[in-house]
Image (tube, rainbow, N blue to C red; front, side, top):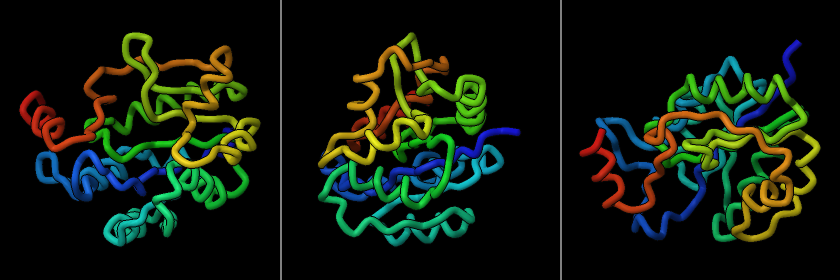
Length: 193
């Protein structure tokens, strides 16, 4: 039987460099948050939690039949989003953390990441291009205590850096890993794709 895997969609950031709620920005008529939720293969996960400060994102989570988790303190940093997400997932053998600003991420790649992790469930699995790690990343439960100890704006990268020997990568096209931090980056993405 497949191990129960959870997914945390991280959609709580303030997007300071973008200047406004970037999750509402659109690529080819669909918002970044909608694209993020569409990239989640629900059949691959026993539970999906969308952590956000934005009512629109939480409403969309419910439309997708995912757990909507309000982050009332986004200023506490990404560590707080990770904590809220893990607590919402409940008992899982692993948790996949998916960011909301990779509008070209494909559902098939996320499904393949889960399959890779299922074949090596003691490892941390991540998408990558050219051997360079990107997101999402999937952590086995043995790393949950370290994830829960993170503070402020320190995320899963801090845990991965301490356990590089436990990391396995799944190669995907570079465009899938491209994140959008500024309006200029969004424009470039739209032009290039």
